[in-house]
Length: 158
Image (cartoon, rainbow, N blue to C red; front, side, top):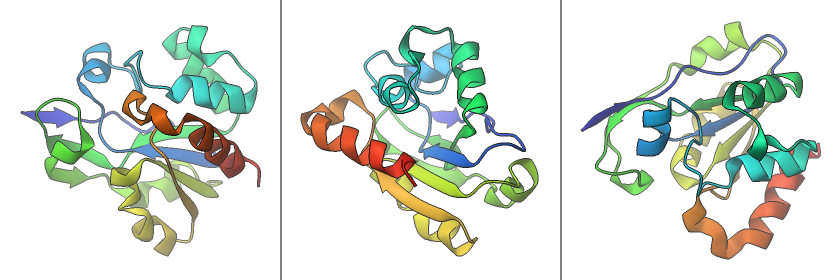
């Protein structure tokens, strides 16, 4: 089944962009980045910026990220996938990263949420951005909770 990604959440003030792979089924149904309640994304990021993102409505979460100069997007514009696992993404269409210079001219750092999106790190590094691949915020990645939390925190302290 072909699945569509979401538009970039970024503007002229965005300095840090977090790139996932492709929204999972729950996120697609909700029309929300990281919409699955089992994904730790909003908890991880909320701890880093000192805001309780987990208990906010979706639009307020996005507004809070923008206020903190953080944007969201995915590596893939679309792809075929049964279920929500990154390893099952096939026939993927990559987003047009060249538009980042227009929509987020102050972008300095691109963080990749997990290994699948991180496969595209060399492309964005070659475009002149500082990059870092982070452990996935997926609930399936909780066994590394302590390390994951410290790696995410370290990435934001620059």
